[in-house]
Length: 470
Image (cartoon, rainbow, N blue to C red; front, side):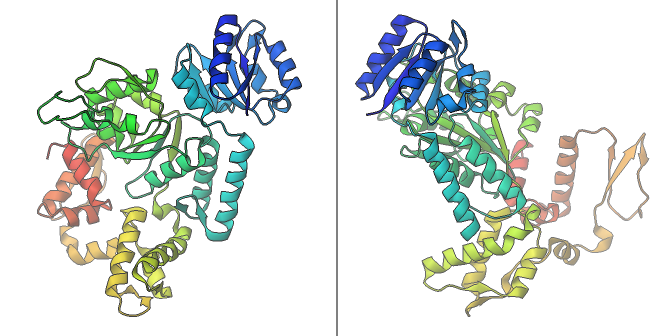
């Protein structure tokens, strides 16, 4: 049986919480001040400390500074309202979670059901680092480069907390794998992990999919439907491509994050939810805010712990390890393990990988199928995009971008060369749109060749054209 210490200056509230804790199978002690809390902890080390922020003799945070006293106890902050500041405080001081007062039995049950000593999480992080040194893997991620080592350190730091994480990075860099690794290292690991691509669901259905709906709430709603927030209760909800979510739904998501409640479509009864949200986007969220595609207040609420994944081209030393990992995975499924020749690895190293790790996996899958022997050669591997572009487009038809100030061209060029003149100070979003549309027109609206020439994935190109209403 676990032991809980309730640090709360309201005697009635402390007594009520002690009863709720007892109902969950914990023994309970109460303290109305920091001084009394220190005495209680010296008498018996609690497994969990439910800590009020406002106490007669100081701020509850002061107790978290006394690491020798806290020891191996899990700390849960209690506050009158959920806020961005509370989340940041919880992370900074190492608290595992926080409760919104008045505390309900359902809230408390969710917290106590996932109590785990900090030392257990620390041991698991050490085990993952041992696996990294031995196999080059950290959870669901592969790579030993310096950029990835920094990512692993951030994951290990944030996984044991309850704060929201915002993962950014280009398409194909592994944002969902980051989310899964965070979930697997968290206290919520025994509960569901659900991933939602906000850009892949019809705008007419996305609210119903996320929040659920009541029977008869709209045409075709023949039964009650539980949304992702209900199905992920107690676990983690990964909202991929969050910047593609309709603005009217962003308002409702913000309310869920702030209050922990939502309503199904067609219902007037609030539902409580206990879900950790991890959001992701392949777009710059600040740029999406400036373009009116993403709410600024929602960005602040989600971006408590930002985590930016590096593109594959910025960690070339991981390429051989990734190639070996994918070929082993494919070989286990197909029954025959193949390896890449040194020449094949050299060809792969020359490629820029606009589609990142996802593109690498797909390229190796195709090369595996096309290779008849036990080795993957360079025959079926992509060439350097610069060489592809040079072969596909005559030099006289190239399309440099001329930057100009005060109406003057920044560099001279032959009159036969197609030019795009951009005034100094033009917003980057405007320049990007002009270059994308001009390149698309140049290639006769052939999207694959356009994406290759621009050095982006086809998905990224489609996303941009969707933004432009094309």
